[in-house]
Length: 191
Image (cartoon, rainbow, N blue to C red; front, top):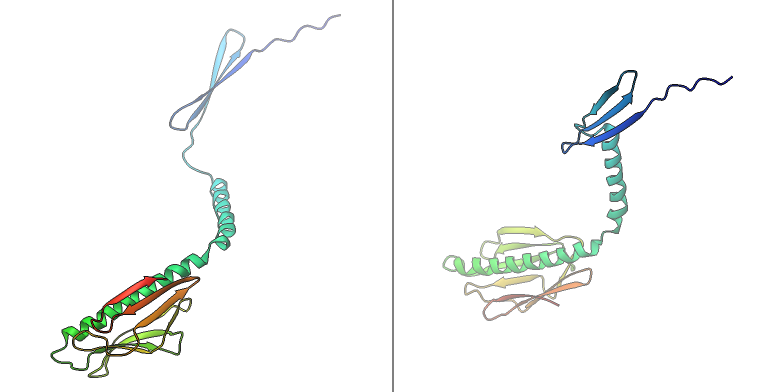
């Protein structure tokens, strides 16, 4: 004998995506007297904890790989440039103080380098009272050398010491600060 043919069930599914991120599924099923529609709506309102953890983990792995590959020599070169410009600015400041206080201070002002060469810092000193006006440290990655430890400016703004040059360098980048003795003009040149 032949077994009866089971009842055929026809099913069709349509998936609809909306602009806001929601998804609908409409299923048509052939039932006893017609079609029935089943709609399943799933709205997405945020990220799950697993997704957030995976993204943070991925960014962390990239950071671990990328940070050691950064070229720290470039940073040191910029530190040399910043230090050279800071020293040149402070030399101009010392000259300006000597000129502006000329009526009360006949000795002038000085920029004194601290520590044995290479220097660890410098200070601005009033030569009349020997009072320190300001002081600055030099980054350990930057080398600053000169033939003399002191740059004195008289009341007319002229350099009264014999040394007229200072060299600032780090990681292959060198700056030379030159001072014209007669006028006290300061120039910072990349070598």
